[in-house]
Image 1 (cartoon, one colour):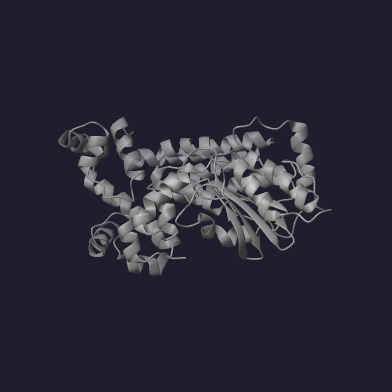
Image 2: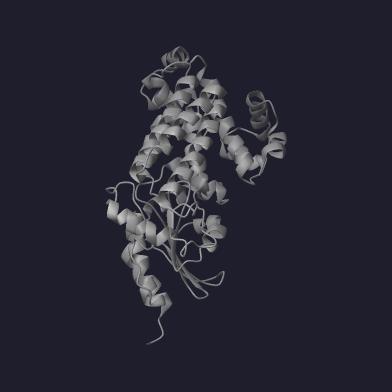
Length: 399
């Protein structure tokens, strides 16, 4: 067999898919091809996670539901991505640019570039990789072999589920290690619960590709029940942080676990998990708005969530909603019991907490990203709403 021209192969894949592709020898980038020129390559943000994937064909999904396909062949690694099935929001992409240390003057170019990448379902990406894997490794794989599921597709037939379960989870085939790339997704969903953002939850369900979890048990049904128990535990704690009564949260958790243990089909467990997360989110939503929120309060909250990295004023929101500012401010207080300014600053403080805990960005960088006029202004606001300075908060809770 003739030696394969890998650079030519990558170029053809890039042309056919419209998605960036890279070729590595070990950890050294030897070739890349893309229609889109970005100030920084987002793959660098997930390098450690992607390099832990050692299967011949694999994938990694980020917290904003971009995904990367991976092929391993000896010391060579091909990475295609990012792409996704639906478009990213500008806010998501600005935060990604922030995490990548893209200079502020290049952020707009980065956002436009990311939006220019061709969107493609995860299954289609994996079909491409299965083909290339056959060329490189001589290995014939199907989507069932690499466990790609789409939450939009019909539930697999019982026979297919049983067959797949036997193939993937038999005692002979359980790998010593598996890649748990669901942490970021869990963080996203738990943030939605904590904020009581039911609109965001429904959008997440529409857009989210399913992600393979790590092996928890040697049988699919037990694995799904174990995963459900972990999810309800995380959701209850997120709801408590969002203001739900501790006793109510734990009682609801116990009730859902009991319901789960009575189920005997994967689709039933998946359905129950969605309703569990939705119920916790709705309860927090009602608590955060002091009563069942009106449409105005929800529209305001959604606007703020999508513009956290910008300076936000009541005038901006009023213009977006085609209202005059005094009416907006008065109506918001009526619906929520707090001023619009307080609500904006509280939401920015919550986002700052997340960045202080889970990123290594400096206080100045976080302050600039969240649209504060200065670091001292950021520190004053943070201390007012978090009862701590940003530095002390990071020292206490930072990972």
